[in-house]
Image (cartoon, rainbow, N blue to C red; front, top):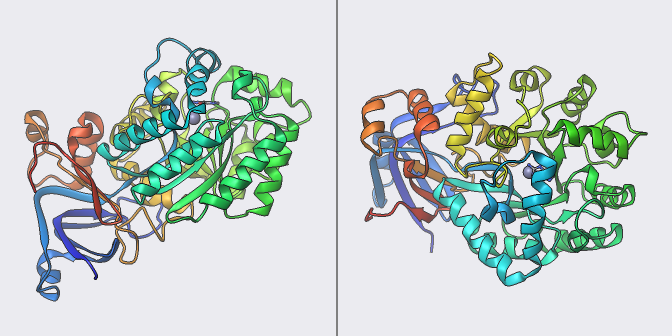
Length: 435
Ligand code: GUN
Ligand code: ZN
């Protein structure tokens, strides 16, 4: 039996790929989104669309703003419990906090429990899709995919690969990384809404042999994602230079092993040489811009204008646990401040674009997620912009969407999320609200 449902609210999304999101957004002040069997069937003005669906059951959110579900393009699920760990920059932070925490994920039951917490955090912040690092453990990666599959979520995930410069109990080998990654691709890539990402942690923790083994997989599976870190911290960059003296620059290490291409997502990219910018642009790869993480670890300021000038895809991301919030709204707010520090300007609709359509387009997923076009999956969020005394004062009832989004990016948190839907199913509803 087909299930048809209507959601009446203010609607906002970007139906096309654009470099001018403020011009190319679609906005209905009194809109209707019609879903059928987990997909979007129609979008339009409520008064025009309602007569076409005389028997439609409609949920009405008169104060709600319905937007596509947010995409978090770089996040570490095992680091959920160590978010906000004090005092270090990248390499010390990895040693003191990250590696000890990730050791716990050899246990499949522990992994499943944390995967559930992680997904609940995503949903309560309006995030419906993410590119997720597991740990080196295959069982932890399975646990993540199983949890996401139970929610029918579009999730891209990968087992971390590292065979040096890390605790022995967290190391795999070139051969086991290739074998386990291939088995995970076989089991999960294209299984329901799940996709696999080859995940070398970063160049310093992989031997040349391991990078070569993963490069072979990259060539065998051209539509598989790739995720790793690039040029985050000055000490890290020096270290890469000393470990890979024969390579022209940091990106060249990955490039040599066939890992710079469309659907490759490089976290951070704060201190790039011009030739690295050029290669990222030419290759069709994506940069994950992680402002709360970059500020928290004192890593540096991402040059967003440069990325735009060079035509490199950019996707916003939290990078929890170095990132300090699961909220993509807050992440857009911190991105704005990173731009301010460089006398650049990030407009609020650009922020929304970079966590929805822009992100999906960079990843080649915009036929499924990132917008509210008919035929795409019904992943969406209903925001409640005026959710408390302060926001009700700051945002007037007839505010333009751009002002609403800006105020929410500066002031909002999970209380701004009225509800979250994945493939037409409600996966989160703000407490204290009866349907
Ligand atoms: N570089 C290598 N591993 C990590 C990680 O887990 N988090 C961040 N932010 N950077 C990294
Ligand atoms: Zn990261």
